[in-house]
Image (cartoon, rainbow, N blue to C red; front, side, top):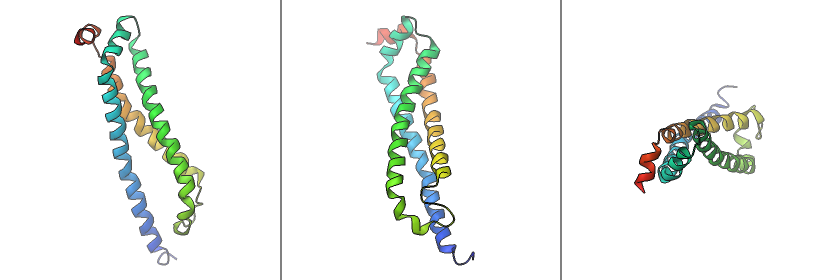
Length: 137
């Protein structure tokens, strides 16, 4: 039995490897976008802090923006995966094409990568000195 599905297993191992490697550029892309967004909005963040917004408010605003971006990607990915799974049904052994556990696991993994990529720019934004930010422009 093991020998008969060896080709299918190796193909799925390649797909799983590509999927594992694909999460890295996704996280780097989210980090880059959020970091750029924070640097472009330094004046606004400094103004918010100057008029009384708490550091927690700044942190939650930026993390919410990052999660919104991540959720758009997750929804697009789930939709694409649901549309394209019928092409892979011949390669699957012992797993349904629309396996709920797999979809949930990948969604949690991508959301976790999104949170991890968003936390550092958000933390950096909470350290913005309002006087320096307002004088810069």
